[in-house]
Length: 451
Image (cartoon, rainbow, N blue to C red; front, top):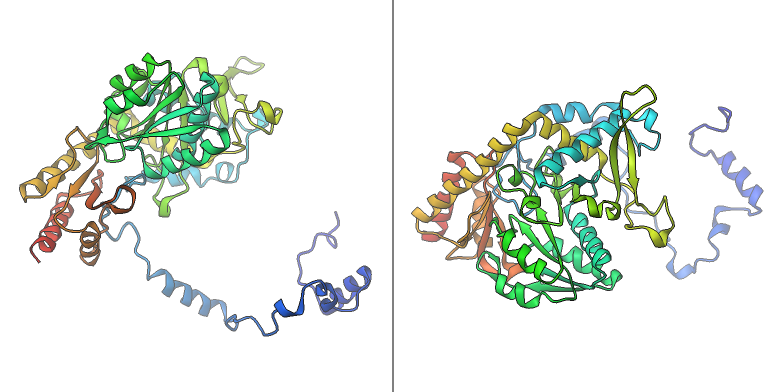
């Protein structure tokens, strides 16, 4: 291609005239004759006049300053996206051009760095979940859960899914949406206070149940008894799907050790900023018997012609590589850069660091909860919880959030819309929240209560 063919220049009046001549019309208006006059725009678009670069930058800066970043206000909202510590090395590594601009590593000989990074991600997630294999990530935890439901239905040849209402509301919405296309029936299980009602789960699980789905810890921060759920699933030949917070697995028993058949979740707690809710990075872990049904890709370790350690794309059950009717998933790409960020974060923290970070979340949430109760506020959670819990307020949760915002804090997640509990507020205390911030939060609630 010559330089003349490859130029990026605006079209001149002469260029337009030449192009119109080639296609056989006299004016630009002739191109729009098929559009009725009645719906054509006659006046000029209401676009502001052009300004200089320096003026534009000043305007954009003024707009940006209207926002408040996570570093300016303490955040007590979790509900699936969390304000965690991110080691500075994470951005340093993922900003390198060989990772930042990399595409799918089809050519193993040219992609060893990226393939090894993905392999390490898979290995660390497998260790946390207690499962034998993990894929090279999906778009987010909710997409991973939807894919897990699809895998369970395909393996068991059944069409019912028993889904706990203690699973994140958005995750449940995704499962319901995907189930329609797969011809699956999703049956939701009511809760018993802050955890799944196991008696109802037992009654709803039948020989047609493909899987039981629970969250660990659940949406309210409480830790579900996976051993009990596994027994219910086993009795009917169903699979157990667990959507787990990977950071919590630094201190909780691994789902795989408690009988989980599929473990999915989101690695946002490891190295991914909140970013208004995304992009995130979903993980998908299984045991060896289900490995060929896993969506996306799996990177494996091998040796090259010289006997040196090497990495390759081992499994790719994607619709791009095999006949569509044989594909296990619609997934044709993933959040590889975000998976790398999570891998770098986990490696930087190390095994002990992950455990200590998880323990800080438990300790700070415990202090937060106890301090609230000492001031007379009721806590919904009866079961052990990780870093989130629900406050049962004597006034609307939105009123509390407004007062907190005015005091320079981001409050919690109101359960008014999703659970019809307008006075209940789901709050979170990560390792970044200080005692002073927590005490100030409680003081604001006291002010609202006494107003």
